[in-house]
Length: 407
Image (cartoon, rainbow, N blue to C red; front, side):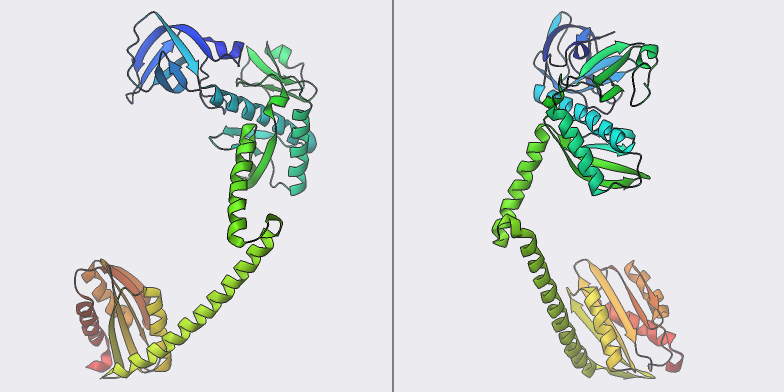
């Protein structure tokens, strides 16, 4: 069994070891097994360490059937003898800060509100915990964050003790241990007692700070997202960069940015409303002009038009406007949009027994497409296997066959 040096000293960054085994897993990844290691394997919500073994990049560390595998970027040329290992200390220390911060925050929620933590995930950018709660209020978040930061400011020791289950039960455990022997208890005196296999700093002050970011409902629980340690400064830096740029774009000092943004959004909404009104007016004029091209049919007047690169939603509105203006009209609009043919048709309420849906059912398969609608309004589309005018002619023919009054 590999000697776990990361349990002896979480601050140890380099070590010497002997290769016990070299292999390739089922997906072709190369790994080595050592007799001792500082590399922490993924587990308990904490990611694995990365680094180097005798110059070879370590990309992943996992425990497989009780064996710690160090997955290497290249096929190892290491044969017997000793190797030197070096972990990525910045990554390790970040994980130590986040993991200890999670202990402190979870303990704060349990002490203040009796809310237990059911799961923990340490991600690349942020950390999340799931709390047994239907919801979280701003007041709860503020109190928990303040409590956690106070514990960090007090710089309490973080102690690690190995013990039996019987010994562990003498402590006010935040949760029951997942194992029954060789229990590793992480202790923040007079605050938190939790069984844990992760790496932690020696004092709460090293966590520096915690900042809650947001929460959301997740499977009848509250998922809380936060950052600790140097990630707090990184988040602050990112947000400050965004705020500076927004301040420049809005031509407003930061304290008044919300007001300036609200004003800008109001102006945008007013412009959009005015633009829609202008578009509506233009479509009305266009519909009036197009109706001058109607062809008299038996029982209705037909308007056919083919457009290039025209949004089908716009043509749908144009078709409705046209039949509102001329109740005896049937309008058929086809759009050639790139590799697609799109079609919409509408009929006025005095256009006789016109069944656009029946005609569409006969036409859409010809362009390997589909559509839907009602007897007096349809829309759909398919592949551009013919011209727009050819599609219009086929629809017109299908329409004539579907109108009884045309006989």
